[in-house]
Image (cartoon, rainbow, N blue to C red; front, side, top):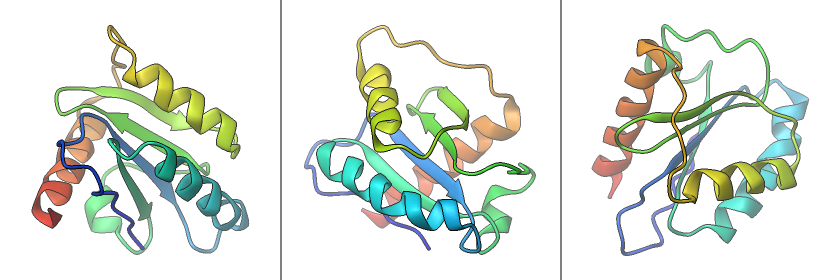
Length: 126
């Protein structure tokens, strides 16, 4: 299942992807919180990715803990890692990444390639 946020007329400058699994109860509970934060940031591209249903997209990244977030600008990965499933945590992460001068994270070539594929998919959906 994938959810795209395209309600803003300006192209998004930040992508927030939640990598989860439908069988994961924590993920199912977190999805409503993810949607809540998505609504609060209309200029951010939010994507919900089921790592099993979309394994071809995510491969070769192995997501072992849930929820895992990937946050990226078009130029660089800003954050990749497992987070506590709280709306406040996601909100703070998004706010931090939207601040001028926010720094990237060296998450590796596979993670950067996934971010690029997700941006391409979002652009195609527009």
